[in-house]
Length: 619
Image 1 (cartoon, helix red, strand yellow):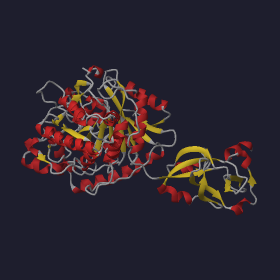
Image 2 (cartoon, rainbow, N blue to C red; image 1 turned 135 degrees about the vertical axis):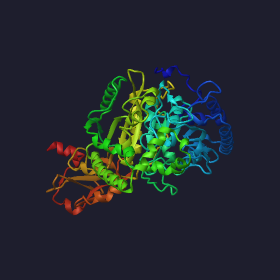
Image 3 (cartoon, rainbow, N blue to C red; image 1 turned 90 degrees about the horizontal axis):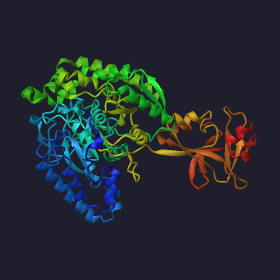
Image 4 (spheres, helix red, strand yellow; image 1 turned 45 degrees about the horizontal axis):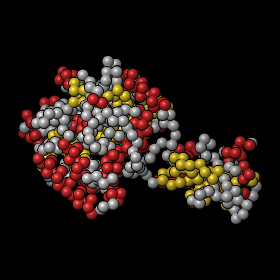
């Protein structure tokens, strides 16, 4: 039976990253805060194994690790008494977190939920190193579907976590434990991995945020591969703000990862969003999916988006390549020796899935690669029609009984809206959307093109404020951060002031939009310019010139343009116009359109109108 999360005890102390930073800034003892959280991080009666953890906060090895870490942080705090400076250098100072147990932490075992595979890591994964450098405190390693093979969370000898909203329903996987401990409020964030949806489906089933970065944005060095060419490290958090801050810490190029490909990407969209949605979404009516989806679509429209129906069959065809195609051989490459020597060590369903690799030839692999390449080109055309996609995170929320009856089919159905994303190199963000009439959490996932991670996270914060859903199973309401939090990187931008046909809504504005430019502000120049209507131009264009005396303030728009597009933009500017330095009303100087003096001989002085729009309105 679904349970009311508000009836669960809320964890003591800080909940979100903003809460933790305020506590640290206020002089709170990090050791006291962490010990209080560790004391209640494990669910269930004392002595009862908690299926969310493989290495729990109470395990002796973990206790020793936590003690050492807290001693390091206390020494650091003593050396930096200015708490604001401390947080500037270490933005996650004292914040507890957990990692999925296929991510290496030096001195601790990595099991991948297979005891026979367990080994002590000699070095920490790059993501763990970066979190520790930011001041975070690891308090445990979480359960998963064995070798990250599954979307259900039931394929583990360490127990089967259930949804924090219903003991009868699965937690989702493979990053089961990470999603569960975040939903409980045991930690503000946890790391998972995502190959086919493992960082999104558990987020949906536990009403938390699941951020899956663009493949290559976050290093996978020190992470046991599932499908190495597709794997991503994902982030579970109670808020999109927190997920973005964690991404800002762990992102970046890494020479230790051959698949590292870091590009900052866009900061957001500069127009009303066009969101692609499935023409016929796959949803479970008995669980209240259609009504919850309709509410999500209504909310997107309320936020100003236009919904564009999309035929998802081409994307579903890509999704089927993951387990019906030769990529399953990447999983076999990881566990081949174990399967050959100790086949009984593997979960029976996991073993059956991976064993399919033996049925594919090298020729099959290349044929599938050609098929994928064609599908990638077709899918890329979507971004000409829409800015992002919105899908149900999962078609339905299965029970444990469903999985026992159909362990493969029930699992496969969950990947309908997740399996294709990494194949196509896209970014994704799973967000809580509603509670169904059956009392179950319902989530949607926003899918963007490559490198749209920061833009998705910012959209997620807006969505979370509008959706007004509880944070996981804590019963707490979303509250915007009390302070600006560190943000993921975005590409370098250059401010360009436009004065005429490039103004918003005018004929040449599309040249800016095509290059991802964003409108920053509407303002005026300093009172030192004259504006002229140039003769014989199509479309009509003005010329702006700085003068020594008799100047006026002229209305302009300042657009931020990605620097990588500046060259192609310059190539479109015909003489006698060009880019020069323009002084704004507040004394700043930005690049902007100026006109060569010789071209103004036959031009009409329209400075008294104060701007190009006012002049056009007078015609």
